[in-house]
Length: 468
Image 1 (cartoon, rainbow, N blue to C red):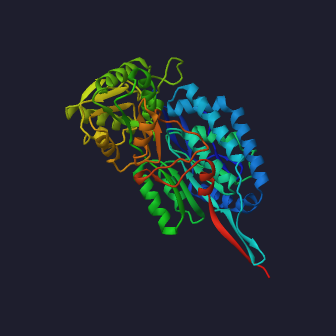
Image 2: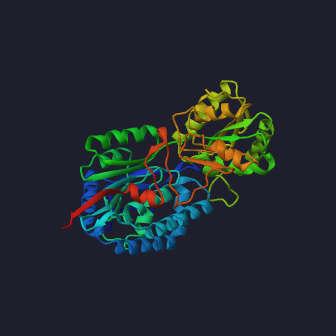
Image 3: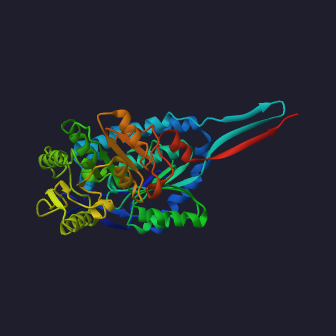
């Protein structure tokens, strides 16, 4: 097996111990990730702290470094994508898209500015509002899009002048470590440190006294723990947490034209997307036809090993999530729901699960009320639009939602009533790196992307000068 190394203070560093990394297509260990020791964690944070003063002073140098960083990732995209597919499960072409998209995110961040806002400039005085970086940022990332989520966060933090200690999920640590290897010479030592290890490492990182901000993407439960830790030291936080996105399908839709879009809004990355459609409310006049169309697509799309060219959707990433998806489907089945298609594992090894469409299910069923984060979609019916809006909003989550209609103005009016961070019309999962992204309610705190992500990586300082 290849040896993967941490990135600390610009050096690739070995560890004394390691942990297994499993290929979800086979369920077997294919590599080992380096287990960061407490001493190495402390070194990573201390070197980030030491690198901060020089890094924060020169925006032009930061822009140049980020451009070099993006180029290094592009140059190594093939090898990184191979490992990303092996550890995450997604089809290889989608892994390549994720890597190249990450480079684009960094390039876009390199073009951002930190403008000074002048409040007063006259003979009495000068008042300016400036944005200043926090210091050392702890970035903790999930296993569904391990590279793109990490690089989006890192790029915003770095261009703002912060330094970063990045910890990826122990399920998918290797592709992030390969990114670290690729960009090793693009950044000054200590500016970006990458450490990996089992879950307790994240707690040790967020508790470190030098950390001034925590940027976390993951589950609501862990996000609450991160917020509690941050509160003890008044660390700033950005939290991008779970979602239970609802799609409302109005009575005037062309089912044949929109079903494919809705399917991929739910099943992209095998449903392992925080803003995937996770429940559908379809008007009773189109409900049955929509269920049949979605089921036909679910049966047609090939699920399997991401390294095989015919695979369109990969496995569930890990056994814990695989078991949760299986449990939720069985709970729905026992509760009287109709499993229209799917509803069972594929094969006798690994974590592939059949694309599953469920109907005849109540809002209170766990498969509807909870986030599945897998290749499962319940489709419910409604007769009154106001009732559909109420049901869509009847959740602790508020990440995304969508409305589907042949009348864009009508759909937009309905979408504006959804209690979520992003409301789409006739699409879902459509993101641009220059638009803000964040959630309401339990789905998060703060925003990422574009100038909003940059603002979230800085704090205000007022310069107040008396004249005369």
